[in-house]
Amino acid sequence: MRDLRQPLVFCLIERQMRCALGGDEKMAGLYPDGRRVRSAGRMVFHHLGELTVRIGSATHPPVVAITRGLQLHLLDLLGLGIRRTRWPQT
Image (cartoon, rainbow, N blue to C red; front, side, top):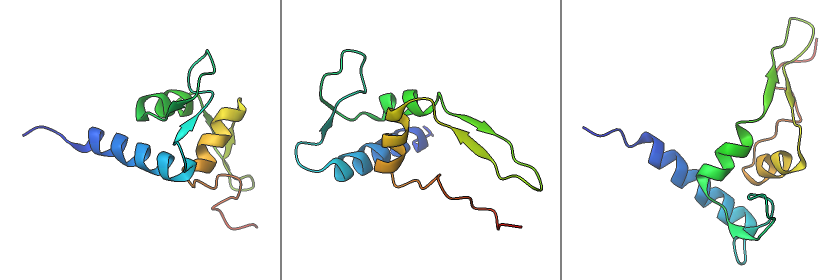
């Protein structure tokens, strides 16, 4: 039986991106030439794949190192609130 999880995840991400963008569902910055295109799961994963996560400790929460503004924009469009820690403050 063929594994359908990967295409399903791509479709869900594309749907979330297009709903969040609204209107013409296009955004700039996914491709190097800056053209406005509809978001594609492959390009979203490409840009988010460059994120770096620094492992936390008992006194410091994990940190996501965002190196480009596009990554933050994509995370916001996907509704992923990485700015707040999920660990209780001690």
